[in-house]
Image 1 (cartoon, rainbow, N blue to C red):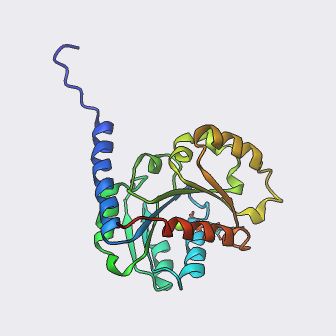
Image 2 (image 1 turned 180 degrees about the vertical axis):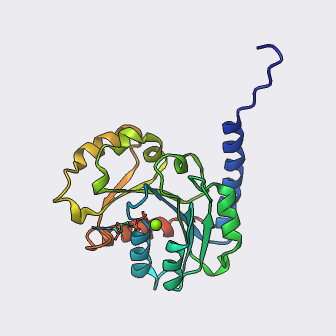
Length: 223
Ligand SMILES: Nc1nc2c(ncn2[C@@H]2O[C@H](COP(=O)(O)OP(=O)(O)O)[C@@H](O)[C@H]2O)c(=O)[nH]1
Ligand SMILES: [Mg+2]
């Protein structure tokens, strides 16, 4: 082992990332916007939920969106159709967004005209959790059809989030989702995690979530 050069690339990548995440935090204070990172597996309902949030709160806040995808502009076109300033980040295979990518996207948004920037992260319950994006609200969506055991299988994601949105509650009659089991499993990882069962389709739970979100946004300190 003598003279062996050992470089922990993962550690280097994550420490570079954390430095840029800090710059994003400073930028968001200076430019006075709230940064919201939404993570989930593919199909959990991120885009549907974001559209519902924007349609409910667009008279109170000015939104911008950063869409992360491996390929395509499918989701960003939906945001553009709502008249929302949007940047599409294409990773071309990468399974997460990092802080440098988000910084690049922020540089293309009219930040002086925005109150909230939502990041729709790449659909994946693993890698996105490792990368701090400098968000005020790191959050995740777990849909009822995915099952209540995901905190056991993907613990880091549940550990780094401040809010857990349990989506598609309109399908609870079909799936055997156990909220008590979810609460027990997430409680072992993150006792400050706020859990919001809701359905972007039926509207159930959306109002409660919007009230909580407004409090989070209004509690951000801009000096
Ligand atoms: N039943 C039901 N379906 C939903 C709900 N939210 C999203 N979906 C559906 O789930 C699928 C994936 O939604 P999408 O928003 O594209 O998920 P994303 O890949 O996480 O952005 C679509 O067919 C949506 O219509 C919901 O609250 N209830
Ligand atoms: Mg989507």
